[in-house]
Amino acid sequence: MNISTRRNDKTTIFDLSGDIDFANSPHVRDSVLLEIRESRASRVMVNLSQVRYIDSSGVASLVEGLKASRDLGSRFILFGLSMAAREVLQLSRLIKVFEVYDTEEQAMAS
Amino acid sequence: MLALYSNPKWLSVARAAVERLAEVLGFPVEQCRSITRAVDEALTNIVRHSYSNRLDQPIAMHFRRAQRRRDGQVQKGLEILLCDRGPPVDPSKFQGRPLEEIRAGGLGLHFIQQAMDTLEFTRKGPMNRLRLVKYLAQGSSVL
Image (cartoon, rainbow over all chains, first blue to last red):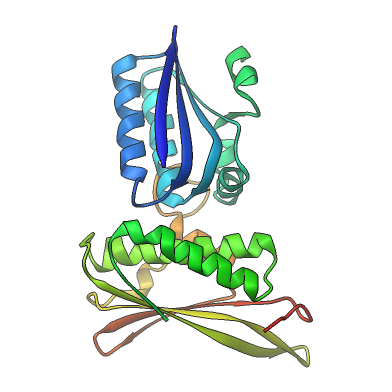
């Protein structure tokens, strides 16, 4: 699993790739929450296009990111959902809770 | 049989083995993914709850053919038995959370129940045993 961060203006973008499971979801959670709290970006976007697998603990990390963003008055956006990510978010019915876009361009324009 | 330790770094290895096994047995791609996800979540539960995140405890995974008769026809499938030596688990805690709740956590059991036809927990001697079974659609068996 890899996580990298891009920042521009008032937007922070996380690029996640590989398998997100219990071995590394605490790292994802901590990275996302730290960035949200420190950058105070008005928009936080998570790129899930290269996520090959994500388990319930990975989904929980995204939910925590969403809640932390809401607490700080910023938007938390998911885009480019891979099949694995979309499947799990649909199964958990959490896909309706997140702001989701197909592409980074659409998310940026939102 | 696959034996591993309770270090989460082995989860990816277990997933790879289960997904490939499900493929070879003829499960459709979507079911291969859901069976794999169920086993991954069950193993994670063992690591977290049975072994309290200790990294060096034993987990055994047994794979067997399963068979049942339904509507007069034999339906074949895959049985996966996960065994750990943690303290006894209270089966009443085997409940997923309502999906209407928006919160982190509590989804793993829901994923297991969604994927598998059978989920049975037993305590045998010093071992917790979780039995998961998924049956193939009738007539699609390559077992």
